Amino acid sequence: MAKHERGLRFQPTGGSRAPQIPIGKKQRLTIERLANDGRGIVFFEGRTWFVNGALAGEEVEARVLGAHGKVVEARTERVFQASELRRPAACAHVGRCGGCSVQHLPHEEQLALKQRMLAEQLSRVAGIEPQEWAPPLSGPEFGYRRRARVAVRWDARAKKLEVGFRAVASQDIVAIDDCPVLVQALQPIMQRLPMMLRRLSKPQALGHVELFSGSSIAVLLRHMAPLSEADLQILKEFCAFHDAQLWLHGEGQPEPVEPGQALGFRLEAWDLELAYRPGDFVQVNAGVNQAMVAQALQWLAPQADERVLDLFCGLGNFALPLARHVREVVAVEGVQAMVDRAALNAVSNHLHNVQFFQADLSQPLTDAEWAKQGFSAVLLDPPRDGALEVVRKLAALGAKRLVYVSCNPATLARDTIELVKQGYRLKRAGILDMFPQTAHVEAMALFEAG
Image (cartoon, rainbow, N blue to C red; front, side):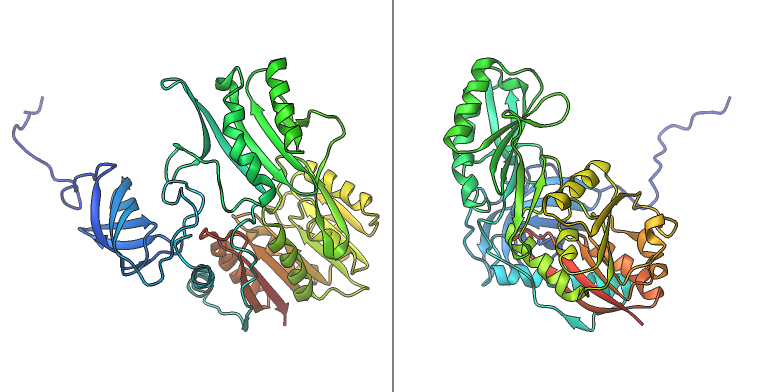
């Protein structure tokens, strides 16, 4: 048996480990620049600090929210020396609610930040710049959000029902009864919702609440146990007062309390009404959504005799307006339930030149029967992870024009590399300000073959 050596200390590779910074610690910092997500960045004592609510050049007191290795996440508690750009926040919950991270920045500066983020991704990842930058597509910076999920949790220790939105970098719930980014139709519901929910007899059985505003207003309650008749009556009276539909989500799928009720939204420019159900993807900004569809059609320039492909079609947000302009639209979605609802939307709007198909959009599409005739143009609107496998084979479909709508500039830039390899040129690009007061960037890009 080998002897045990006593008193030896082995130092890990890379030197001694720096002591961890405790959550809640306050630190005075001078912010060097803004990160792409709108947080302030400073390099301090060998660590990179990301500070919510801070602007470049400011001296702030930051409270630590979390630390991982040499990265520290923090939020601004006090501003000792403010940037000339700083403006008063419109919301009383700024810095605590995790929803709106850049409302201390003027709207024009928010747009400039998002434009820089898109340009940087295209340049750094794809080594490319569009031939033309389109101006930002934007709308009102407040009162735009037509859908919201409200967190609800029973605090057994305090015997209190918490209602509000998730806090920054935390599962805590910030009590909120006034949210400036909600559309006006949802404001009274948001204000009275906490008091109503606290009247229910089994608050510990409540999950979350979703609010919807479209062609109808609706309140959906997620619950983990059956509701009593008395509780159901409270919910019905609340919704009747606000002229809102009541939807319940217990076991199974969400269902309206009154059978036959439906939710929907209009695309006025094309005289279309699209039905949806809770859980379906719907753009939360109605004004920018309509402007986005109009711009996509303008850039794609569909002709009356053309066959056009719409990938990641959802409920038909692009496909149905396209069908007003072309001979045929083929629309493809990965989720069968969405395909079925999109097809019903086409029928209810008397459109018979659009076909909907289900397909795995993480795989190439060239073997699909509906793809063999080819297309004049393609529109795609993928989720955050992009459409890498799809775009690798797009040139084989014969499309000369391609509009790519993206909710993640990083995957747009990655997919741009593949499109350029196939002979497409990045003709035009620009940002879509779908989520004012946040650093979230949506973008649109036009590619042309040859």
